[in-house]
Length: 608
Ligand SMILES: Nc1ncnc2c1ncn2[C@@H]1O[C@H](COP(=O)(O)OP(=O)(O)OP(=O)(O)O)[C@@H](O)[C@H]1O
Ligand SMILES: [Mg+2]
Image (cartoon, rainbow, N blue to C red):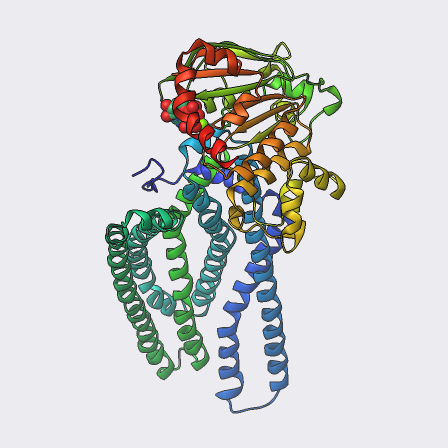
C-alpha cells in the first residue's frame, strides 16, 4: 500500500490547525456575526414555545375563558413568522459560508496544484489528490459552517431552557435534568464507537475508489491479460471489509437511538411523577407541568447533536490536516525571492523586464538523481546553439527524457548548472522559460472539448485565424476539416475519439501556436502508417525551423533531419555527430540503426 494511505487519526485536539483553518472564515466575518445573532434568536424562540403552551393552559384552558385570546393568537402568529424568517436566514447564511469556505479552500488547493513541480506528481497519486479536493474539503465546510453553528445553537438553547426551568420550579428542573449527564456520556460513547467503524468504512471506501480507478483505466489491459477473475477477487476482499464495518456501524446506531429514547422517557416520567404530584397538591400549575414535559423532550436533541459534532470534529481535524498539508506543500522548483522581485510572479509577471530569449542551452557539469533514486546523469556537459536541432537516441531508460526535462526546468540539476543564453536559468523565472517553450509529450494529452479549444490552450488570446494558421502549418487542417464539425469537433475525454497520430498533430499545433524559442518533442514509439508518418514528418520539419529543438526520436526520418544526433547510454553521450558521420563510425549508432531501422527502410522500399 502506498504512503498516501489514509492515516490514522491523532487523538489530540490540534489548536494550531484549527487556527489556520479559521483564517478561511475571515472573509465571512459579517455573515458570522449575523449568523450568531440569528442562532441565538432561534434558540430563544425554541425556548419560548413551551412557555406559550404554559400560558395557553394556565390563562385560557384551565380558567375556561376566551377573554384576550386574540392577544395570545397574535403573539403566537408573530413568533411563528419570526421563527420562519430566522430559520430561512440561518440556512441561507450557513449555506453561503459552507459553499464559500469550500470554494476558497478548493481554489487555494487548485492554485497550489498548478504550482507544484513534476516531483510532487511523481510521488502523489491522483486519487489521493482527488479525495482531498472533494470529500475532505466538503467535510471541512460542513463541520465549520454547520457543525459549529449547530453547537452554538444547541448550547444557547440548553442554557436558555435550563434557566427558564429553574426559574419556573427549581426542584422539578433538578429532577428532570438529572438524566442529561447520563445522556451526554452515553451519546459521546456511542458516537465515538459509531465513528470508529465509519472511519474504517471510509478508509476501505477510498481504497475501493482507488481500485475502481485502476480497474477502469486499466480495463483494456485487464482484458488483454485475461485477469478479470483475479481482479474481481481482490476487489471483493476490499468490499467485504467495507460491508462488515458498515454493518457494525449500523448495529451501533440502531442501539443508540432506543437508548436515547428510553432516557428521554425516564426524564419525562420523572417530570410527570413529581410534577403530577405538585399539580394535585396545587403547588405546580398545569401549564408549568406541560412546559416541563416539552422541555425534557426538546432538551435531548441538542445533546445528541453536540455529541455527534464532538465525535465528528476528530475526523474533520484529519481532513483539515490532509487538506492543509496539500495546500502548504512547497513546490520543489520555485523562483527565488530575488528573481521574483526582478521578474514578477507567475500570476503577475513583469514581462517588460523579461529578456528576449535566443535559445542557447548549456549543461555544465550537471548531475541529477530523482528523489530517492540513483544518479541518472553524472557530470553531464552539452552545448546547444540557438536554432539547432538535437536528436537524442538510445535505449529505453537511458536518460533521454530526463535530459530534456532538466533543460525545461521541470526538474533542476542536483549538481552543476544549466545556462540559457549564458545565464543560469535559476536566475530567471520559470514562467519566462516556460512561455518560450513548446513541448509535445511522449503521450500527447488533449483536454475534453473542441479541437479549437485544445489548440487555443497554447495561447489563450489567439485569434481563429492564428489557430487555423498553426493547424495548417502542421498539416492538421485537412483532417480537421474532414471531421463532422471541423474545428468544433469534440475530442472526447483525453482526446479518446482521435487517433494517436491525429492527437499528435493537434498537440503540434498547440505547441507552436505561441511561437516558442525552444521546442521539445518526445516522440512516441508507436509506429504509424507511412502516409501519416510523411504528414507528421513534414509537420515536425515546419515546427523545428528556426527553433532550438530537442527531439527524442525513434523514427529514422526524424533523426536524419537533425543537425546533431546524441547517442545516450546510462546518462552519457557515447556518440555524437550527424547521421552519416555516425554511420561511418560503425559504433553503437550503427548497430542501433542496422537493427532497428533496416526493417523500416525495407518496408519503405517495398511500399515505394
Ligand atoms: N519520475 C521518475 N522518478 C524516478 N525515477 C525516474 C523517473 N523518471 C525516470 N526515472 C528513471 O530515470 C532513468 C532514466 O529515465 P528516462 O525517462 O530519462 O529514460 P528515457 O531514455 O526517456 O526512456 P524511454 O525511451 O523509455 O522514454 C530510468 O532509470 C528511470 O527508471
Ligand atoms: Mg522517455
